[in-house]
Image 1 (tube, rainbow, N blue to C red):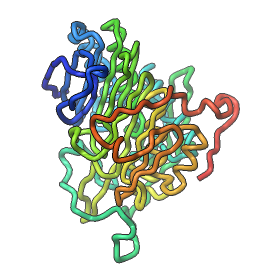
Image 2: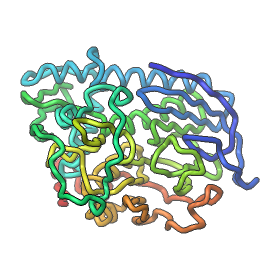
Image 3: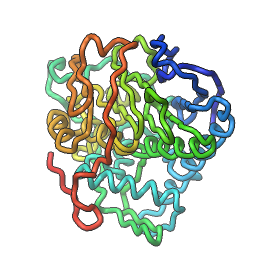
Length: 379
């Protein structure tokens, strides 16, 4: 784990890539903050009590290290590597990996397979076979279908096997078996789930309210500040507060942003990204540039945003059906908002304008009991 620590006391606006902007006196509160790098991305920790930062950071680092050892596809010594190397045989896993697998399969069920943990082979075929910082820099190819003069051509020649229903998972016995040719990749759910667990660990260690952001996935735990946690929503979590976007506040739950504009690389002359459509086994094309959503957990918010990128034009209606507040940005920069997400106006785009999001709920709160009734959400 590579990390470099910066600890500050700051105002209540989270801008994961730069200096927090000025706020009105009524919105200004004092927080403890630490920032560092891990998993090739940024980590931001904020506490309502700045004096408890040391214990909270230590708890977050322990949590992330344990998750890395359990879930990383790029570690030869990880548990998931052992599962992928034992295709066709049942493997007993730790309680931590069992929780991650249960979430990944729940995500697949909720989204009718859009968020599928068996896309590991497809990601490898797309060139994502090592830490993305080691991959070739992307080109300038446009994702906007109207900008292409020729029809879309296949991105991945070989066909990858993606079907979460082929995974046999016994949660009670903590055993998992995947068919030959399958590779599990937990990237679509593990980072947001890690943010949820890290926020809970930080709040427990510090005895106060905590916010954890991992690569732009935001989770909260414990009592929120009086004015809520302010978050600047942009295409890239590395952007500062001057980047185009919108500032919102949350008092609980989580906020996630998924994008086809970041985590891009060049493979066989084509620009690739990490959002795989299981139906094609290739990076999704002709979809939104960015989708942000709020839910009762960061994991649920990320399930919604990832599926929205794959559903493309049908995503707004699907998100509205679920009651998930969301913000979708097209490749031309046009912004669409769903449900209770604040409208995008010139006033709300300024860094000093802060609009509250409603109390979030679980993504499947309005759905049938998943323990008894399979969910089949149609595209």
